[in-house]
Length: 254
Image: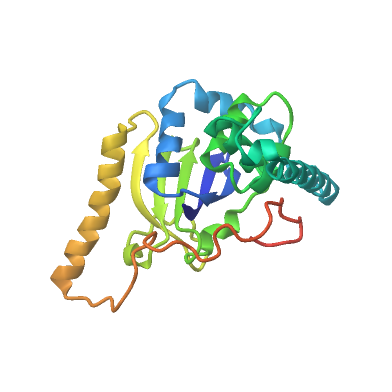
């Protein structure tokens, strides 16, 4: 489901990763992926060790990745028009086989250059941790200030040793951690844990939900009227799925 989000790694006083992600940004999706990554004690040290491999791609690099993605997508589209694919014959008899072709057709950049794809999501963490070669990366930190479209954000602060979960909903605007104070609009901190005291999956989801419910209780007590506000994530973004899967131009904004 289309729920835009950011995955952020803060290290040595800077955001080294600020990955824009198009899909499944809820705590039960991207949030649990980040938690599972952190739960393996070997993962974060590997990622930190590989941060020196990150580099900002040039426009020439981006054009090359996009051209490769376009070729992958075109080849997959051709396969999808064959009788074998349509009739689920030959090498396209299982759902896994069919899904693999469809992903190449509609998410080609994920195959041409995964870290520049909007579809990699929280998997960017494992990708960087396991990287053997230089990794092109685009920082989308400014997207954190877009409290309409950036619905969730997950921050791993390696300096402080913390894992933080943010929601862009204005309902929780009183929960301002001050982390993104440089932006006029910014998300609200719903939950925070030390990296040495991470919750299990059930507690992770419960704590986030508990914070949300505490706000609703406070709202009832104060008699506030929110006049038709919609909870973040209740409606799917009408723009989800629109547009080609391309790396952003170095001159374009999120």
